[in-house]
Amino acid sequence: LIVTLFVFSGINAQLFGAFHPSYGTFTGSTTNVFTNGVITGNEIDDAQHEFAASAALFMHYVMNLSLFLIMSQFFIAILVTAFDQVRAHLLDTHADLVLPDGFQRGPGLTLRQRAWDWVDYAFT
Image (cartoon, rainbow, N blue to C red):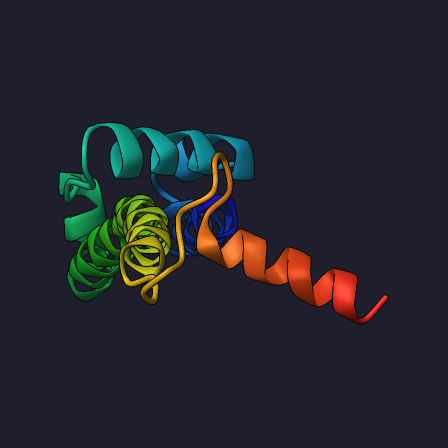
């Protein structure tokens, strides 16, 4: 996200820095891109549109789409992590529920953990 903001800041400084005071310096451009891109959403400035309409529209759509995709990755990562934790718990529970006849569940450890303990014991 930080790299993308710096890249878009540089592009906006090159495209609009000569005539727009907010994009005149890289620091100003970075502040403007962060404020407009992350906090409020990227808007098309009248001065940008007047100077270079196609560049202003292109940067508007590219920045919004890129930042939306980057931010959605954080949400997807949270969901995938939660899904993996639930799946691991269900696999352990299922392994304990399908014990063969004559076996009993031991206290504290799942069947998978007891099996790995046995493997460690047998081969060390």
